[in-house]
Length: 280
Image (cartoon, rainbow, N blue to C red; front, side, top):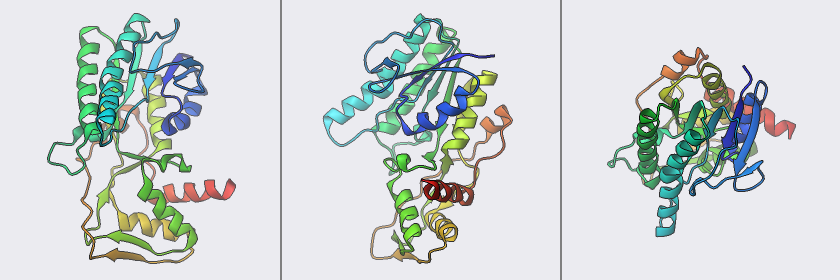
């Protein structure tokens, strides 16, 4: 059934990759602070137009070291998520999908714990409580680290795309320390398909969106070097501090719920990136 979907944070790299998949069978209305159908700053109360069936919130603030960044992160991620839920309630929206982060699962002992991780956890819990007491269907999706075919994801994954750039040039790839740090990366195309199916099937609940296979930095580098086939070595700079792992308990419940095939491997992801760059 065709639905009207209100996309908040439509200018984000992920939203840009997700919207084409949703637009095949639905009407899309974009919302954000620039270049969208509707102006929307979720840090402030706002109104959702009449006739919207589904709201998807991609908006996020990623924190920083100064007080202003802390305040912005809290306003966008926590108060902003609540504002989304309240606006959806007022507009009689049938389904809210909130794009959170796997970092919401980090505890304060993790070296990657941050205002971003903390506020994502707070936002998730607040949205779940608000939607439960107001009987609003809610889906919370928690992606791991996101990459895609284009360089638009490099802002939040700089080392990942540095590896690719060096592999494309045939340069050596240097990894600091002796620990071959592990990560979990999910391709934006997989997330787009997950979100499309969540909308179509109106799946509710809280789900991790991750790759069943963690990868180390050397595996990422070797995959990129193999795909670009320009040479170069992987070098561990042992006199530098180790990079810590950042991985999570495996959870593929979302793929079972959506009946979706398992995510794109890092090798296939590198091939997609090479193809995209070749075509550009």
